[in-house]
Picture (tube, rainbow, N blue to C red):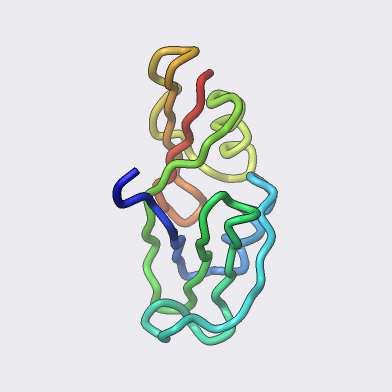
Length: 123
């Protein structure tokens, strides 16, 4: 596969709240430390997510003055269930589920800070 996604970042004004949200939604765990630059995240607020947890390396970060930004797709068993859980944790459904069950179904939601996230699966 040429140019695969190898890292993601979810950034917002409340990085601890975002880490709690994604831990609840997807079961992610973090190693919290410093980013490579303060423009990426406030000191001590970069939550590293290893590939063994999320499939690819990533980070949930930010702090005061960091605007919400991200878009990536997370593989799930059931798109409707994932969207419903996202809503139950404070997110807002934006799309879906849409697609062809058994092939590809997608959905999108915004998290509590307005980041747009995609979920994808076969149902």
